[in-house]
Amino acid sequence: MVSLPGRKVNDARAKMVLENPLGFSRREMLDELESSVYDVVIVGGGITGSYAALDAASRGFKVALIEKDDFASGTSSKSSKMVHGGLRYIEQGNLPLVRHSLLERQRLRNNAPHLIQRLPFLFPVLTDNGVFDPRLAAGFEALLWTYDLAGGWREGVLHQKLAPNEVLSHCPTFKAERLKYGFMYYDARVDDARLTLTVARTAAYFGATVLNHAKVTDIRRDNGKISGVEVETSEGRSVSVRSKSVVMATGSWLRDWHGAHPDADVPPIRPAKGVHIAVPWSKIRNDCTVTIPVPGRSRRATITRWGDIALLGTTDDDYQGDLDNVYCTADERDFLISGTRTALNTDLDADDVLGSIAGTRPLTATPGGKSVDVKRNHEIRIDADGLVTVVGGKLTTSRHMAEQTIDAVARVLGSKARTRTVKQPLLGGAGYDAQSTTATGGLVAHLGERYGNESHFVADIIEHEAGASAPLVEGLPYRTGEAVYAIRREMATTISDVLDRRMRARLHARDASAAAAPAVADLLVAEGVTDRAGADAQLADYLTGIEAEKTALNTYVNDKEYA
Image: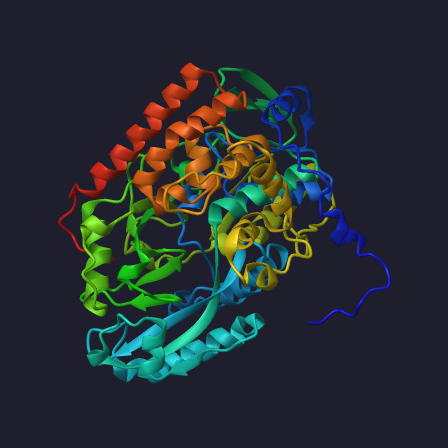
């Protein structure tokens, strides 16, 4: 819908465009945590917990968001980085989830235009060993029409049928001799870690206390009702936080600690592992997300371009291991590479892997059957003592999950305050024009797709501070000033916070990130976040983590085929 020009300044939009950088100081947040009484404490700084904090704060509740590691350090930085309705869910018969996901996709597109961009998806139809049998192509086109009518139309373009030469123009490495034609439809992609961080920062802007590297160790109850939580910070401080209610938004980690009273009916948690690997884009040469078959296996894979790398994913298998140490293995790497080599003319091999991520989806299901077939619905539970638990769902529907979660909190508190996040822009997004900013490339485009209309705060550092304009990670566009901004204004307190989540450096260039880690350690010391000994310990841990990732990538642990 086109809005008419206004004779007055749009105050709601202007309010979200900051004159000065948001403080977002960890020290100040920690002091506030110790001295305040909260309506609700939210445990878990992933996308669901962060959006719940924003929803609660914008309703006027006094809220604290507490994350044991870093914002998005778990599932929310390990996703396929897509904001989508989920074409596969139509195949499962879950049309309501698709319809609602497509509505939420467009709300996110409107509220965070700097972080979420339109993404074409290409399905090739092959003579043999394709994503589906060519005889089913007509049925697949009907499925795409269903997708468009369910809400895909909101993107402003419907699916298209492409001739073989058109398919090859989008991915010239396809094996042309097997190509009949193709279908293209449209969804969106997102830097998931930056979206989560931005939601958390926006929550802080509305008054939430937001703290990373602080672990909730216990939930306190007085006379059978929630009275607060116990917190241990990375500095070794113990804090007793007073609160009238608590939300558990820890995703897969509910498997190991759910915080509920022993008599509570806790929903089943079934973590499902998914992995992605990054390879040079030159090996694929796609300009959209390409869907490829993996012969003999029921799950298709996707290849998405991000700058000069291509991201291959994903697997979907039950996982019972350590949730804090999930890695891509050689089995999973080979699964993705073999599918790529089957569909494309490429010599891609294991030595081309530049980086990898592995995470778990918090499915709400009992054991049995393939995890890929489990519906991605979410579940919210209210216990009699005031504990609210949310689990399941997916990134695309995080805003709505948060709305329903805080609706539950409002019932606990006896409040009738309603959500305000449907049209609430996130910091950096109000009035931002992604197309005009990114059209001509360069530093402006790079900063724009990361910070939106807050880019000038970062550009000021790059322009005026010594050494800030220097490249930080070899082969990637990040500048040293971006790391400085992450430490000062984005609550980055570790090397991993900076390189793995404030940037996509480790995924896109693992070895170059290792080489850049000492410079980040020096910045943490210079900015007063840690001392030299602490920085050296962080550096050792970071390099050990990279070696563990590389070791896992070359270790075979299964003899099964992946779903």
